[in-house]
Image 1 (cartoon, helix red, strand yellow):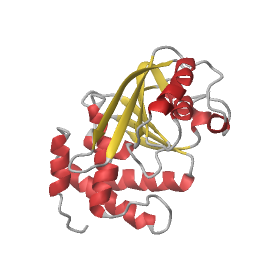
Image 2: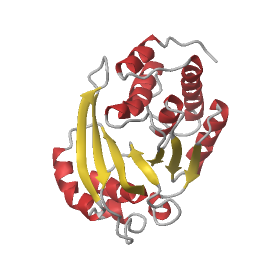
Image 3: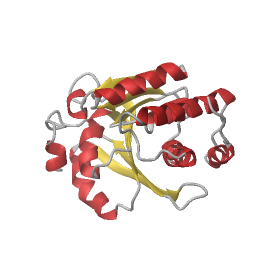
Image 4: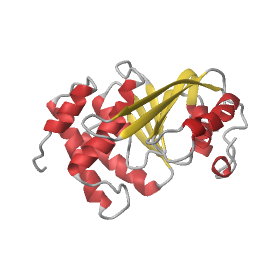
Amino acid sequence: MNTYDTTQFEKDLEELNIRMTEKQLEQFLLYYEMLIEQNKVMNLTAITDYEEVMKKHFIDSLSLVKAYDLSKPVSVIDVGTGAGFPGVPLKIAFPNLQVTLLDSLNKRVSFLNSVIDALGLTGIEAIHGRAEDFAKNSLREKYDLCVSRAVANLSTLSEYCLPFVKVGGQFISYKSEKIAEEKIAAQNAIAILGGKVAAQMEFTLSDSDIYRNLFVIEKVKSTPKKYPRKAGVPGKEPL
């Protein structure tokens, strides 16, 4: 493995009150190398510069600590995980989490399995499939927490994600823009799906002007069985 300057990364971790061992830092660096190598043959990320990946992917993923206590053992599903964000960084930093990575592209899931093996991670699995299918059967209302950095409006994301969450659990959506109108538009969908808006955390990533928004939805009652609707419908016809 190459040698990297982790000074800024460690400073950013400190800002989030996250302490890591040398092994955990090495896992992040190996993950970075695997991401960049695999990105040469398949489209995983448009961000490849070392410092940018550390900030915009790793620190951004870990900023969840601003909205959720990750020190306790909780079950987490990352819907539309792509190259593994935020699920893999969360698992590296907080080994006590039980993490499921869900993605609809098998090639990405194969990459994630190779990362899990290479980093020696346990208590984490990568599953190939659509949220619309898995939220209807074995994974329905199974998780304490659902997270997603996927690009979709909040109504659509809520339909994909809230069915995975236990009553009393939370769905947290990572957003990179101000979403006042989107939030208002999603209120009806969130209520129908058994959720209620619990909090909204707005901040910039440390030592940057990169704006972030964590949107916290609490699951207050079971999601009606007819949701999520079949593949493609939540995106075309948001509730």
